[in-house]
Length: 473
Image 1 (cartoon, one colour):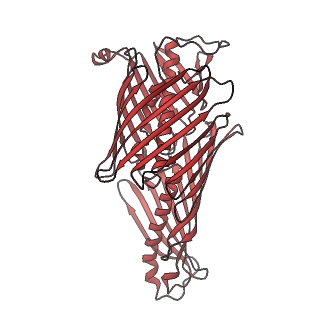
Image 2: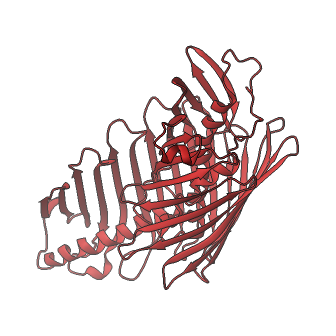
Image 3: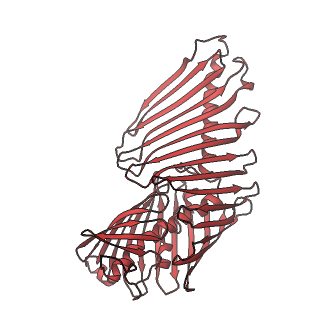
């Protein structure tokens, strides 16, 4: 149920979004003068993506063993690669057992091959054996036929130490290599993962391992690549170090420690001087989990700190999560903002989760949202009413690598929307995993480009002019 709340906090961005008449052009040196409404409405999308990331992190830390087919290199996906490696190991063993009557094969001999073509993919399976080295290699390669599918090519190979060909009890899994190529035009280009076993069960399957994953991004983005190194012990304790490399030479580093009792801690050191520290307790033992984090901003920044806290309860029988999330933001002038969301997430018989969020903000703004899981992404749809009755329609897609597509429309009121009025503002964004993004905003037939930075600031551009704004309102 890893994606139970993959974006369970996606709408918490509204906690900070306000149409109160307090917004001004934040940059006195700006050469672009824009309506205060545009600033607020541009900031709204940043909040969506920030809280979607928070929801994903909470689930990663509080339910690390309940994983889906994750693209992002995190603790949960590392455990999934272990399970995938063991599954392929057992499958290769079935074919190797047929070779017990053979005393020798040629170098890297093809032992088994199978191809399948369906309406969705062309898949090839092959097993090779080098009898002199005592190494078997099992490969599964899929090319997907749907041009709109995010992953177009997926290749996985494992190496198994066969040792004595006549005795399968001494066989051991050694390594796994996985390559995923994504369709053209996406932010994410490819992901490679290498897994190396460090400890084994009696049957030769993996109990402890290291993984190294590299995610490459398109050349037109500031983020060049993400490299993750994960070490997991036999008791499922472990460590994670994830480094974001940017094209200007700067880096952001995430690290985490997972204890075998379900507890742990984490730190993030961002390239812009922002630091995050926190702790968590997984729900696996008693059905209760929590998450806390504190974000500290550099001296002189318009924000001082952000405190986040979540409490989750998991009903193992009904496969349902209930919980609540609170956030407190302290600005550098001492002002404090806060909000609350109630969460209910239910898993159906096919393993897909529907999450309903009831959100209430401190200033009276409120809304309800539904999040639906899919095979390649989670889709969000919902509505929000601001404190002064502006009505917002939100649609978004969140991907497991941390990138996202987001579109929202703002109407003068729900009555105007129901009567078929055109939206006052339409905004569309594409976000990177670090929270930065590019987008377009249309307000009163005027087009604005928006360049979002991960530190909570953005630049709005129009007709060759620009202004810098603060995204936490």
